[in-house]
Image 1 (cartoon, rainbow, N blue to C red):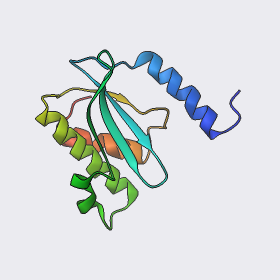
Image 2 (image 1 turned 60 degrees about the vertical axis):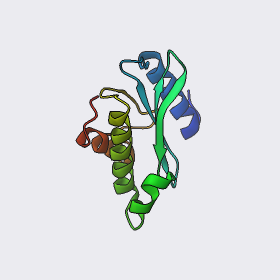
Image 3 (image 1 turned 120 degrees about the horizontal axis):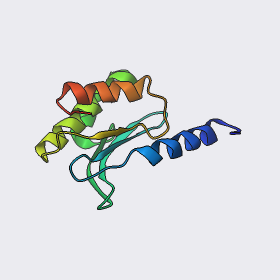
Length: 120
């Protein structure tokens, strides 16, 4: 049995990664959430390449995030990653919440990406 939050998340992450796999047609959108920031990358697991990545630290996104709550920042990052994906010709992804519970900032990021036109 898991002893703390980190081990619990690691167990959930392994369980998710058994089922979720990115392909060239439908890459995996992986989310990482720290206390201050949120990071997202779109990965082709077969080629083992990161196709697109952004975060709250990215220069293109950072300017419009000042004064917003973390949940709103996550939504903007989701919209930014969707825009980058659509520019690269990626319209469908598989969502990998990376062991985090689909709640709060993780769900806000997903909603932002969906509203910007990404399908998953």
